[in-house]
Image (cartoon, rainbow over all chains, first blue to last red; front, side):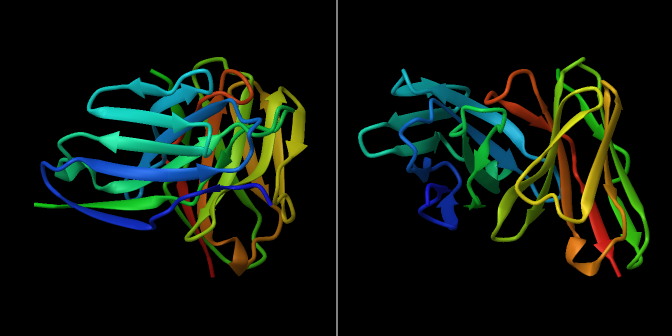
Length: 113
Length: 112
């Protein structure tokens, strides 16, 4: 069935390196995507979003890339810091009715000092 | 800043107890959501509400009910708690369906 998924459940990077977290989606009708960050014991925190009429969008140290041809979404974090260690997950609005977002299961990012 | 608060961060209840989880928002948003989050399963929608006294079932409503008597408050009720309802419960709001959702800090519920 259609779903939002992640390629890597755990990603370990060195402090200062760039991180790339990936997400695959299968519903070509989805037109809005969001990345969230969730630290241990806390609620998910909005990072950045992108609409399907865009290929990329930049935030503070983060960039989201959307490749509609292969239905792929990625989050790039520049100069990864220890405070970036968390679970990251993507969400899409694949349902155009009252039902809202569909969430992926998440990738854990571990930043090594 | 959007602010969503949940009444408890941690709760321990016994099987069969009635449990109330409360969520309050201060932004006059219409849409409110309750999710549970379990390892490996991600966020699963239990119920949502798009107006006072209005509610709709999500993907896993069994064993739960909700109440929305005031716009700012959305309550999740476990009528008779069971051990398989041990989970992290997250409340969220948004301004339009299909747009960004903002989450509360979560309530970690343990049912013994």
